Image (cartoon, rainbow, N blue to C red; front, side):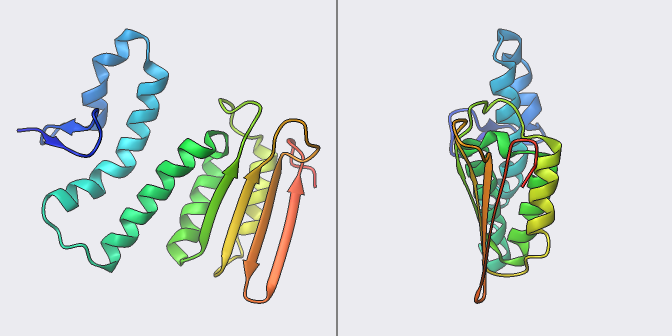
Length: 167
């Protein structure tokens, strides 16, 4: 018997994966959208299934739900910042309790940011262990492509890079 997990596309049968549920519709030409749904589903469905199975929502599960929600929000707000280097580092920081917020826009939201820019940003935020990190992708008409503000204790750091990772 299928279970509804909160969105029209998320009725899953026990034992089926998200990719099983989107494989047939992918033939209709919406493979890019369906790939996005699959990636999001693979992130959120396991934790939602735990809730649907009646697992008590303790502090650990609440944190996992919060992280899954943040990952989906990031994919929607700034898909071009979903570079694997940044996604992994942001996830690690969130697990440490660092508040990470991604904002902004891009002139090319379908393209991931440059590898050098992703690495420059990752290197800056990697030492953070507490506080808040705010990343903002800037519009194409600006010299800088990405801005990061780190607030930790009494310290504040602000950095900007061009699209190729140049400070």
